[in-house]
Each structure stands twice: as structure tokens, then as C-alpha cells.
Image 1 (tube, rainbow, N blue to C red):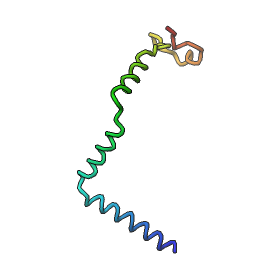
Image 2: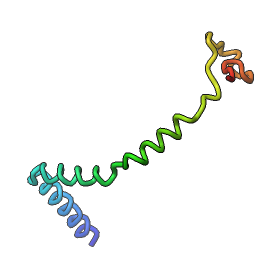
Image 3: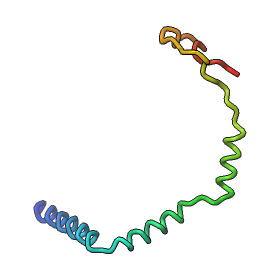
Image 4: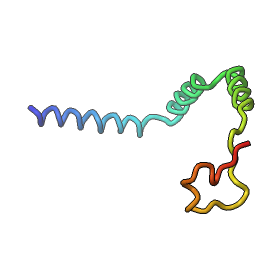
Length: 82
């Protein structure tokens, strides 16, 4: 019984992939274009997100000079606050 089920699964797998090879790629491109149109964000939502990120301020900045690995564990050894 398990062999019959496994054979049916294999037949379905190979048949599906054979259809994919035979089908014109234009069908897949058209489907992809439709999916991409659904996923595309509206211009207003993109602008709102950009405005949010542009308002954020940098709270820390790396030190101007090199940071020694020995001083890395010390609090604030390699990071300076603004």
C-alpha cells in the first residue's frame, strides 16, 4: 500500500514538472507580474515610512579613532554619544 502511494506521489511530481517545462514562460511571467502588483506599496505609505525614518536621530556615533579590543568591553569605550 505504501508503495502504491509513493508511486502516485512520484507520478504527480514528475507530471507537474513536465507541464512546467512544456508551458510557455509567458504564463509564469504574467502570473509574476500580477503578484508583484499586489505586493506593490502605495506612494503614500512609502512616503509616510520614509518621513518616519528621516525624523529619527542618530543616538550614538562611532569613535573617530580605532578601537582597541581590550577597551571594547568597557562601557562607552568605542562609542561616543551625541
